[in-house]
Image (cartoon, rainbow, N blue to C red):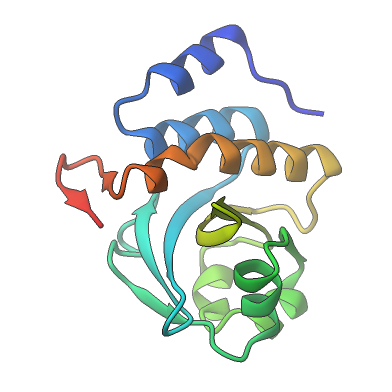
Length: 165
């Protein structure tokens, strides 16, 4: 199972912009190839990208409709962690499966971010490997918890210094 070092924990605790550090520490611990974070708009069942480690493929601000989808019910409504392994599972749940495949990514863990019992967003990790270990899922869940203050403070400071809400 992946572990965090004292230095990694200190970086997370002291981060002025939390999501880039969650991404970096997660990449060091699990080797994920892509990290994104989305805010959830419950009234429309849409999610909007607040953070991305690959702005060319997944620009900030992009929206995804999740109304009436099994993924939306599981992650956004029920608050469950979602794991997809392999091209078929990814294609079944994600409209952007061709982009994911083009990037050479084959497995995903989506972690809901919850405040006051309600989902407010997700932190998403993608790997080039065709499966993820239980340790990688556990680390993704932990990093999702660590990232929660980015939503709790009503906005997110992205690497350019501007704030998205």
